[in-house]
Length: 448
Image (cartoon, rainbow, N blue to C red; front, side, top):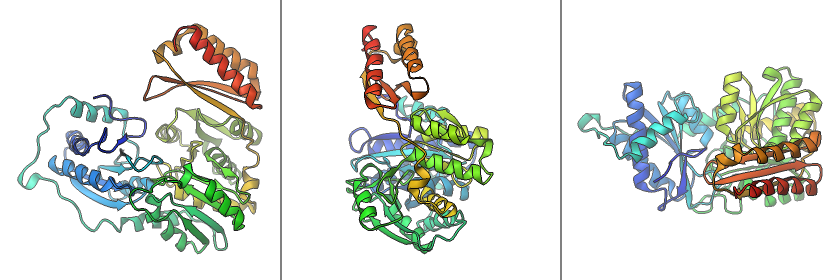
């Protein structure tokens, strides 16, 4: 059995590599490790998305937590950012989300927040993994030391909705929006929130049945949303993923406004209003070159982190930055959240439109997306590619040749023996040629 935690918790196909027994052991090990550190009786919050397996995994996690002497606070079906927020609000020692985000229903996952609402540290994940994989004994509690489940927690989603409503600074009445809930966790909160805002909102894919989450719906299947927005002359459309921590938008012309463009819009708005801390936004290395060109034009600086919203937030927290995110639609607004929040992103985008008196297409227009080519190369040794002098010379030469008209990137996969070779350029054929040249260099050295 290999490493359990990836860049976004534990993921797998339920009943295959993500089992009830593993979920029980995770709950048990998390509680054991935290108890050693905190020296008090623990309370751990749990939320889940709408997958058919989520109830089963929730029961196993709760059993593991209670067996190790921890109390459980189950929030029911609720978005990932709500669990992060409520974990802090309720002073829980940790929060668990049962979700596989944008993946099909047969997948599921376990991701954990600490008491501050931050993704669990690498060190803590390693301690939990070691305890599970080593087979070391964990002492189960007995009698009055067994953990208990707190009841009456399902209404906690209303506190999360109230939190989102507190972020609204202008009257959104009259805004016409279409919201795609992906048949996921947003189905439990988005209608309640949008109804409270008194705008004209319609909803699609808001009827989960356990197996239809993300099926032809949400941020990974956005064509239906695009058509509906145009056909019905709406102002904007929003598409979430299964756990609602990401949002992609659609403008009035049916064009997709991705995370890069949303970061640009928020960065410009905050700079204009004098509240862009450090005059910087935080991106990942996979943000499009066109975003950086547009930010340079308006004098907004930027940081680049590894891929993953946890790395984005770590940078934001360390430096006091207030907006960051990923091209995929994970947008973090640190005034209100410690992780990506798709529904919050929707509210803030509508406010940006009203404050500026501009359509979404106008706000996003300065970001000219550069054509991107990304190819995966299976290699024998990722470190050998990184350290190979010839490969690095070719990568540097290709990058210098592009100059300020594009960029190149070699990135190691975190889960498999693969190097991701990427290039962006003003023309697609140029990007394709750059990628092929770098791949040939890897092959010439006998590394692929």
